Length: 242
Image 1 (cartoon, rainbow, N blue to C red):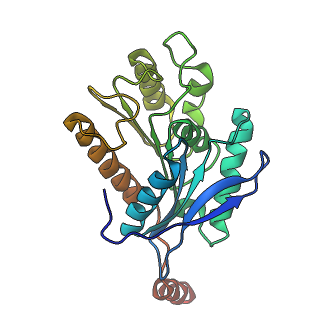
Image 2: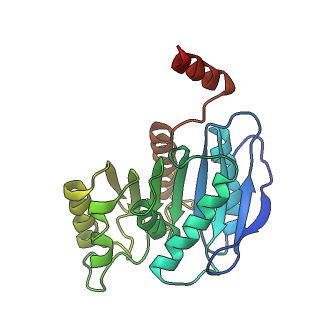
């Protein structure tokens, strides 16, 4: 997933109710296809954010990557932080249906929580954390999200991920299939753990990492609404006038 031309993202911060959130931002000229908010954490945030933002740019998406390492609060407060980050994207005239959301780890859980609060174009959760009630079963708080999910959601995780054991995964999949008003999909990769998306020398992890990124881009392309070009806007205006 290495881009031929690598652009260095701009480093900034976004104010939220839990304090400033560090971000890396990559803006595109012309008419970008869409916008993506990336939620990540961990010591490798800077390099991973640059890589993902460049890969997204190669597909026409400008993006903002947020570092959640120093952000701590209740679920309600953390979803509010996501709202502040989305408002930051909207200042570049992005509408909700033109925005995709991708989260890793804690960000993956937040992407699912935010899918029940905000109606976006698409959302993707990779190796989400804190999904169980502590007894290998789905947390009631997470299960309660199924009937109110507003954003088409894709979840991807390793079969050996301790945060989402088999029973939890099956219960989440069933709840979403039976109760979600929008399309959702859950993918489990056999033989890998929670860091399968990171660089590895193991062939099974390389395959899972490649597949997860392909699925992510396809999910965005199918569901994030493109921004209209000036010619398309003019055509719509003429059509409405006639």
